[in-house]
Image 1 (cartoon, rainbow, N blue to C red):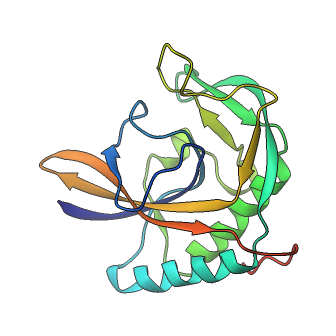
Image 2 (cartoon, helix red, strand yellow; image 1 turned 135 degrees about the vertical axis):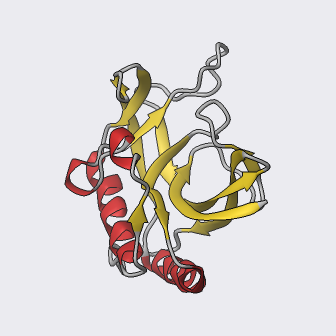
Length: 180
């Protein structure tokens, strides 16, 4: 598999182990909240970025939010999602992670803005999967504990893009002093 030098940072609602690989299609992704959309970091900066993310997590306190109302996202406004009801703590996490990524020469993929607003326009949400059994979505009023962040990387597997979980990072802080 060829490393395409693209990374993403998410909170996995449906946890997966490091080394897990899945297709880069909406239906194959575990439920998640995107915290930093796909971006590129030079090979010689990746380890430093991961080290900084792990250091940050030692100071960031886990927090809970509730799942909010349903909306439609996407270019065609046809992708069902549930917003996170309490946007402020997730938006703060997003901004802090964006600041860290920014130190390592981020270059966002061109289409990132079509699907996910960043920084001041960020709206944390969980996209529904197309499962008919209802198992791959959350509902308004459900609670979600943000106790970790996950870094994934994009790989090319013989012409098919896949995502590999390369680091699950636990938030271990005891107070509100995040180290962005």
